[in-house]
Length: 295
Image (cartoon, rainbow, N blue to C red; front, side):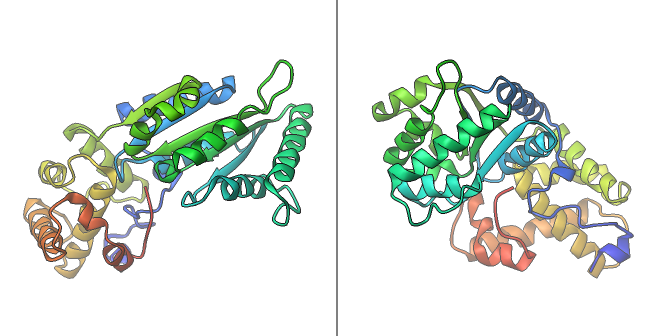
C-alpha cells in the first residue's frame, strides 16, 4: 500500500523474524558472537532469554543462516506446548528421522541416537534449538537434559539451545533442574535498545529498503519512549507511521506524525482494557498487521 508511495523495495517493519534485517545492537552483537562461539565448540546447553519482541527469534535465525553451508545439522523446534514424549518426536521429525510417529519413546530415542552417531561419523555436529522454551514444564526440560546425555566415549553428540522469555530463567533456577543448570555453558539475556540504538535500528531497516530519508531524526525519541527500546514495538509504531504518512500524503515522517500514531496505539491499548505494553500484541492487533508471532 505505502511501498509505492515511498518507493520502497519491501516493507521495512514486518514483524516476521527476517535475518536480512538483523540489527547488531551492542547486546545483539554480544549474543551473536557468544552463540557462534559456543556452537563451534559444540558442548553444553545455551540459554538465550529476553522480553517479548526483544529479537530472540531473529537472532537465532541469523545465526542459523550463517551455519547453512557448514557441517551442522539443526532441529528447530517452535511448538513448545507439548509433553516430553511429544517433544522427543518433534526433534526426531525435525532431524528427518523416518517412521517415528508410531514408535514408543524408547524406540525414538534409540533412532535419534543412531542418527546422531551417523552424523558424527560424517563430521557433522547436531544442534537442537528450542524457541519459546519458557512453555516447557520442568519434567519436559528434564527430558531435554537426558537427551543431551547421548554421547560417544569422548564426545557429546548433541548441543541444545533454549530460547525464551525471562520466565525461562526462573524455571531453570528451581532445584528440580539443578543438573540441567550445571550444564549451561552460556546464559545471555537480550535487553532493550538504547535511545541511540533505536534511531540506528530504524535507519538500518529503512536503508535496507531504500527509504533512509523518510523518518526525521526528531521522532526517534518519541518512538523510543513508546517502545522502551523493544524491537517489536519499534516495528509497530514505525509501520503505522508509514501508513499514516501514506494516508496524509506526507513524504517525510516528522514528530507530529509519530505522536499522532502513538496516541492512537495507546488508545487501542486502553480499549483492550489492559494497561501493559503486551496488550498491543493481541492476536487481533497482529492479524490487522498481517503478521503473527515472535520477532
